[in-house]
Length: 79
Image (cartoon, rainbow, N blue to C red; front, side):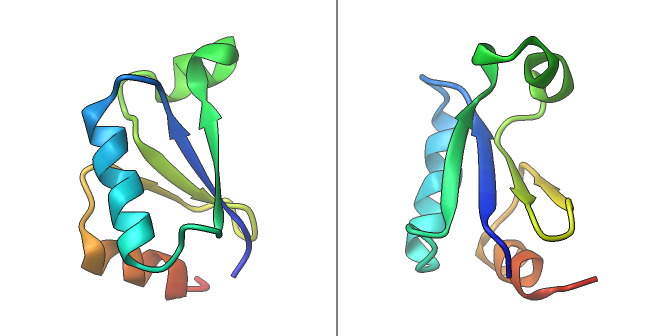
């Protein structure tokens, strides 16, 4: 599995929940956080959808809301 990107913004309690799920799943070292307000294109794309988790290897995205099971399927599925 490739590296994960967590699109987020500060002071977002849903983003904090998503990050907690990543850590609980043992993925704390497997993702990088990208603040969407730093990039107008990302802000337009993800502004009302954050948090969003993206895989670098296949460009798939997992939009909130997701739980531990959905997260596990997302990181294990190569399709």
